[in-house]
Image 1 (cartoon, rainbow, N blue to C red):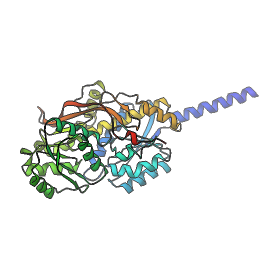
Image 2 (image 1 turned 45 degrees about the vertical axis):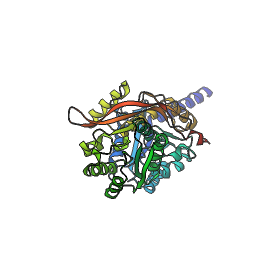
Image 3 (image 1 turned 90 degrees about the vertical axis):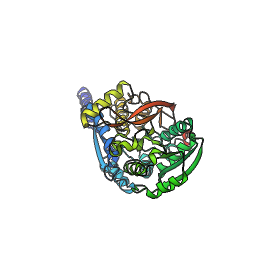
Length: 389
């Protein structure tokens, strides 16, 4: 009798393990798919989905289900989506947020609920410093990083008087702070615009009056398209060069602004022409799947998926093993499209950061060409402010 009871118990455990293995891990993606910035979320989603498609709906060999919803760039809506994913859908892993103000509204609450959040884009200083948490990881960058590299490059290039422009929200302030951290010249002006602004006539007039020798701006998505076009229409692109992080010069934005951006130098941790096996494979696969060159947002979505896949494999898909899952994510045991990748103590990337130049290729496409790596194995300045719980 005992033997039958033992066999029965073994079968129960076996079937329970099989059921757990078959049940897909749910991953909730909260991202921006509407407004003029909607293509940013599309790129993140498509990069993430590509990684899943390459494994037949799995990540790290573990079946996954991706739940996607549009935050409309609204923090309150994003908070509602997060709560629904966690309470109704029992999601234990979230990702996808584009904008830093949305991330600041969502991330602190969800990570306190024993939910893992892996950022494929927004990297506000608050979440890297005093607001860091063991359940929060950023696979993209810390906001300041792509501006720090431009600040260093502009200094090395001999520019002495630079005008600064960014939207008035947390990422805008982070990006200008990053530039100023490595730029050693004078500041001709520092202007913060409305988030989502489309008309920059007043700002361009004020800029012209200051007569700087260069302009540094952070205006992602549709904001960048409008500014670059208006800047060129004012004729200033012929006399005052502009610089910025990659967000204002991504592959899809360039198709909208065309010649107005040629020659602009921008900072990025990734470019489609980085010559490593993982990146070559990713770029070719993305083009085949979607018919366009991926942006850095797509590369970050792809790397977020690959990072999570490496962790899910190590815990055999059991997301209830929170400590083990965190440890597996920290290992970052995956082939990144950037060539190499590790986490700082505050769980943001250590990576090379490059200067790229906007060019027009032989086929007439507007794209970026990597100029050089300015920083090697670059982390972030907020590590010392981070005290993990």
